[in-house]
Length: 296
Image (tube, rainbow, N blue to C red):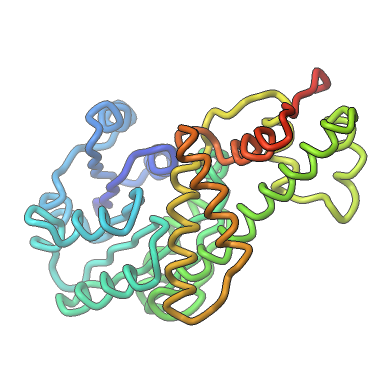
């Protein structure tokens, strides 16, 4: 059985490669022909959205935003035009719950299943097949996807009905981005006070301040490595989705609102193509200090 995979960016490309390595017959598509070529050399075949809708019983999407997901599925040349009853679409993009529920409703009318299944773990998780996959949708559709989730991640959980995966990803992104901001502020303080940031990191990582965020981002920041494993542009979009969703639900999110303004400032500063460890630049600019270390 052929599986469709649409979206071959920083996350999608290694995820698709892992499926190919596991022997999955994959049909891929992306707006970047170079990204497609990489997967063709790995053994994938190419198909348009409509061709993927025709030939594949299971289709994965991982795209920059919900508007693009909607266009890929329901646009003039979208996959939904050729989908038939009994197939399943899985959107692993980070989108709003409302966008996920819209896809679910439209595809349900065609007899097609839909699962929103955003991921956490960044590029390293995508490369290593250790992503956390958070899902919303119908159980029978989720269970059809488990064999593929087991290849791409080390955990997958059906949270609830359609949109639940996207809600979970929004909560995840609040915690991750707030964690990076807190780490950034703390280490700018330490650097300005004259302490070596890597020694501070080594001193606190085993205590209550220790976290996956601390372990992942401080070595990058201290080494001035901002090559993206997850671009700030995606975090900017995700936190905007947090605020919009929270406002729709009448949930105040004052810390997330402040975080969005930090990300907005970084956008104005031209930092959107950097790794989200680049949040530190905001605090460095305020304090006129750079967090760096010669210690590895």
